Image (tube, rainbow, N blue to C red):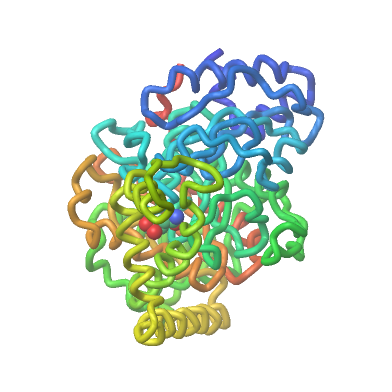
Length: 473
Ligand code: GLN
């Protein structure tokens, strides 16, 4: 069994295609490993492979762990919230359905921060997730369960969502690969919404090849999501070993201040490595990136306050009965939402309220435009903008729960890209104090193929060993 779990998703799919591996054995090996999860990475694991699974697709029957906020027909879809406890939707998210059709059957639903609000997975109503590299530490968030499940070897790959960093930051903290695609390339239909102009689904995988393989089957315009669009290129599996002719831009504002020494040291080593592969490194100005966090923490809560208005106890989810309708609404929301979600709803409602709308929301939107322009200007000079993914390695459970601002600072390097709608990947970048660090590459809209190539070349050169995080037996 354990050698099955050592295969990457691509290797497993290849073994199925050549007849060397029975997809039923593959599914059962992962199902058994996931059922023995002792990291709280899952909130639900399937009893058996779905009957309609088709291992003849390119994804070869390689099972998929899915973040709790994707609607999955007949399986719990709770978005980490008590207000959706045991909610089983009558339909399946487009991207989950597409992947099942391509041969990646649902393995389980993974834990997450409530409604994807958080950077540590400690905001889940279903308890925190432990980091498989060190169980006293967080896996990152909000896709913490997906990242931990893949890093631990419970799942060959997983789906997450990224609004301000929720795929890339947990991927970095767990030593795996996470891609936040170009906004719109993956349908949001059936994804329980946090901030609709930012939310984007993407893959969490052991390596860059698996990321490209999964993403290849996620893209496509969907008539049920008016913001979705066709990716202009077919996604191909990467093979580059050199970076000749590629220019990497390091934000001129990145001084290392606020970044842990070990994280900065690994980042600088990888820049040298990139040079040895033929890349040119240049400083690029991103003068408005510093305002990304402030703009994000106005825009995302504003959209959340509107999206979360639908959870009122009337149509689905939890209800706390009361004598009159208004009390029913308020009691349901009082009991159903956790403290971080309430904080965001209040922040967002305030930012959108009459008299403040322009001072907060309007201004944040203008900053957003400036950040997008900064990236446009940067990509006139460089192919990719590169940063550490997260300023720190995985922190101790509880270390930042009492200080929302300290928690928000984690997202410093990851919020500018969703604000600009552009793609970015995090790849494992060696260890600091025995914990994984991440290297982030961001490119222009629709540059995923080029991002995969560059990330693949770096991945081969870095030679990260993820086996220490793998705890599945
Ligand atoms: N950590 C950020 C937040 O709390 C990002 C979350 C996300 O990308 N879903 O909002």
